[in-house]
Length: 69
Image (cartoon, rainbow, N blue to C red; front, side, top):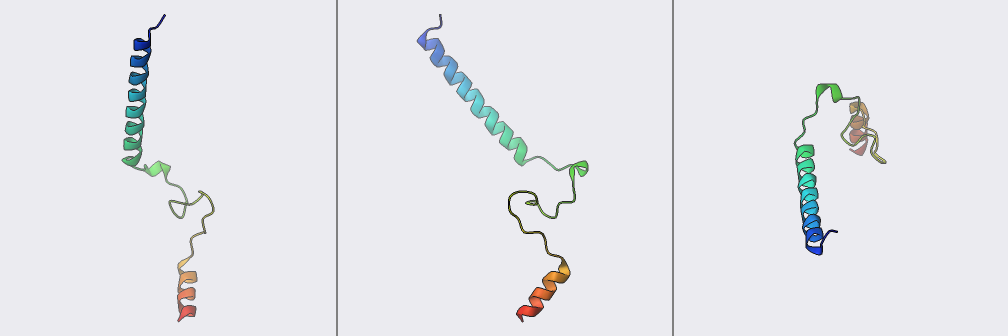
């Protein structure tokens, strides 16, 4: 059987290993570079995530700014 001390040591080790893997994953995710083959026709970084307004064309933006004057 496993003793309480061995179980405690195993739990501490696995918890520390899990935390190190989480930190490593986030480090790699933040510093990852986008490859040219991974680019798509998205109009912004937030496209396709939740309720995001579509990007306005330059003519729509100019028309709106002129109407506000």
